[in-house]
Amino acid sequence: MLRERLGLSSRVQFHNPPKATREELLLAHEKSYVDRFLQGELAEKEVRQIGLRPWTDQMICRTLKLTGGTLAATKHALRVGIAGNMAGGTHHAHYNYGSGYCIFNDLAIAARWLQSQGLTRVLILDLDVHQGDGTASIFAEDIQICTVSVHCEKNFPFHKQQSDWDLSLEVGVNDPVFLETMQQIPKIVDDFRPQFVLYQGGVDGLQSDRLGRWRLTRAGLQKRNRFVYQLCSERSIPMVITMGGGYAEPLSDSVDAHADLFLQAASFCSPCFF
Image (cartoon, rainbow, N blue to C red; front, side, top):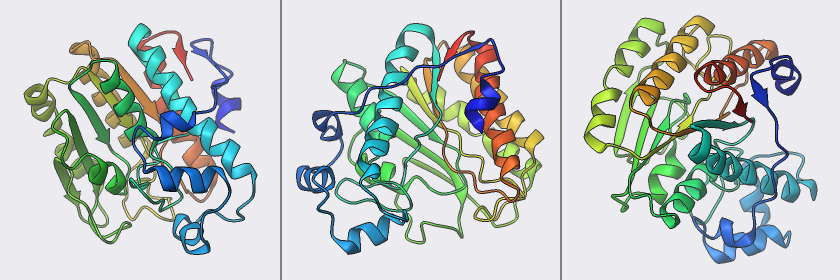
């Protein structure tokens, strides 16, 4: 549905990403976990913790494409400024296990790839309603990666990890409170001075989202996106946008908000690569 919507815009260019390789997965994940997934040998307990049902052999191709999409977008963004992945944002995947619909952490893999290219200050800005716990745990001891998470305190994951910056908000938060909290982010950015930003732009904070527990509006999320894009544009920081969560009823609310996420990005860098 999102692909059809974005296809109406002349500001968007689409690319079919390559599959992530085993070596790329190993940038941020434990060897045994990677190999057991690729060989279809995850234990039932591990599959249950990831939560994707029904579990089929197609999961392997889907996951490698999803991860490859974020890596491809990262490489595009280094050249053109902004690019995105119409999937990705799998921020609940930890070093050696998956969780919360997330098998591998594409944000972490992209950040590790950027490090391999000599970038020493990468910021992961996670504005999904759920804390980026897997991302936080992977980079807990890495001073070159700054993790920032604005999330609902009483929501999944129920055992939180410690990001570099956790801006936790209560259940029922509305646009003014959320946008006021966002005002803390420019100082974090200016103090860290990132060379690259990975923006997890989940839209599950919408009031109609069945998993979000916030009361944000589409207009509020549009202001959020504009704030982030202006922040990076004014500082000439290249960035990648990942889709993140969206579970609204009706689903069209999530599609609308996700379309805004990418089309607003395209207004700052035309054409944008997705």
